Length: 97
Image (tube, rainbow, N blue to C red; front, side):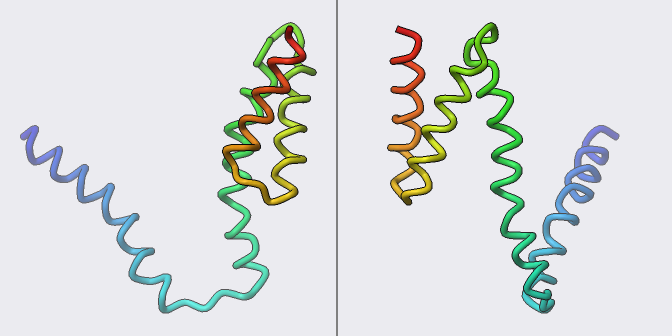
């Protein structure tokens, strides 16, 4: 019974992942839908990162915001992501010294 449950759960989990992979090639979206879909990874990443920025030092959230602002400025110059992360870390380190 447990194996049948595991197999059933695997099938139910895989179906919603496989169907879009086969359908997406055949569907043409309007340009605004494509722009909206392209923004989803950045929005999700921002939603995941922002709470961490605010809690770098819980008593002083401005330090995390300063580090995040430096990372945003570096990223606007299309610099490698590693340098944006290093810039944010260096900023937080220098402010907390």
